[in-house]
Length: 263
Image (cartoon, rainbow, N blue to C red; front, side):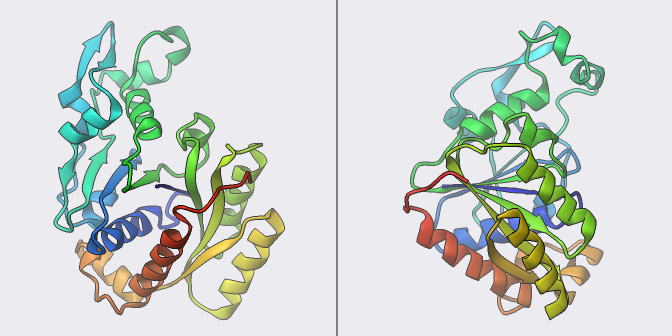
């Protein structure tokens, strides 16, 4: 099953993606976590050294200024993924080549070539671990979603903080138009510090027609770990954030095989 996390930059997507991936892995599930964020954060959550490496390098060759991938998405992930201490297999976009930065902004002139970002997006969209889980942490904002990064099946989780700017980003996702029929669009209220915070997010998402599947409290343990550069997967299983993510994993497990209706 594919789970894609969307939201404003800084909303906590990487934290939730890492905690969810680790939670599923501790239950004996096969999990591939993919970071499509150009500012890597998921590796640290999973207990791995942060890196700007382009994980697909082992399955790509330069091709007229771009990149050509060699192998199916499954073959590429099997070869390029790195295993986190929790057993999660991890793949990130990283930086393919600094000289591609200008090329990235001139894609319309080179439609027959692959940039590093396009190559990663293609793998993320097409890869699906049959019988397992694929958790994709997207870059903040709507650009990658507009480019088709989300894929066509699974659950798209809009991570929303109790702030107007975060709600505005959620509104933009909804306003992008019709989502694929095989994709559920749901909400996760994150960094909730009070009943008023929870009510604010719930009211905003209800107005957008997005059901809330989880409420994750503002957890001091998360702040301490992030400040100290410690892996969030090492948090006490009874910490508020981990308890909330475990409940989210329960809900995902219940609907993994359920029929999906259009949003």
